[in-house]
Length: 200
Image (tube, rainbow, N blue to C red; front, side, top):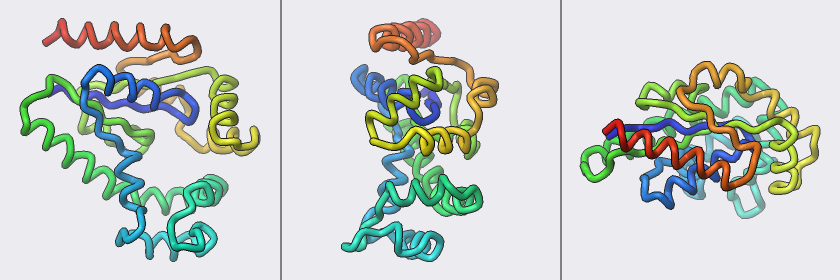
């Protein structure tokens, strides 16, 4: 089974690519989903999050306020590193577990590991090739502002704290340009899937 690593910075449209791949009946292991499960109510990791970030990142009912977490960790580089170390190791382990399960089922010619921190966490060691979704910075800022209602400065600060696109591009096997229309994006993905099919 061929494992494709899929990544991209905030607002790049990685989730759109991931959703389209699902429509094409390609299984996707979603690192964000697993990370959310790890911080869901009742998770054994929540007390450690409370110690690291404090009560301010929790709602009154004890559930994690993800926007407050983002505001907290993306304004402090050391906190970001500590939070990632807390969550990322277990996320990576569970991603690998799901990929191995898919491989054991022997039903799929390919599977996707969708991970925003694919390169930062060195999860590319699990993959056969890596796709990076990119878009020009202004397009990304506009998308995130419209989607999340976040101020431009906060978006720019978050983008600056992520691995630079140039560095990601040097590690990627394929660059998907998502600065245009959805049709243009889907055509790129279709060509990649056709190439993969021809290689098998």
